[in-house]
Length: 116
Image (cartoon, rainbow, N blue to C red; front, side):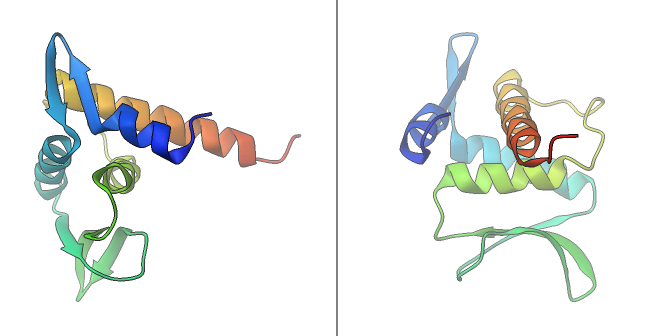
């Protein structure tokens, strides 16, 4: 498993088909997708991880301005996991980053689930 710094370097630039996108560009595209599903993406400062919640009766995804973009990408990907994105167009690089993050989440949850 990659440590945090290695993961940050790996995700800082996601490349696909010879083109690269910054993590912040991927976050911007995923934020638009979230808004398409009626979620407001807010970026706030504070001592919190972030995630999906309801703020003043409005469904929101809150990202922490103090966290690196890679952490906010993970929070946004986890929050969008509940939605069917199969029919939503995403740039190939964004889709690849989203799928990679979902695979990472699956791997982590498999490790933390009790053996049956």
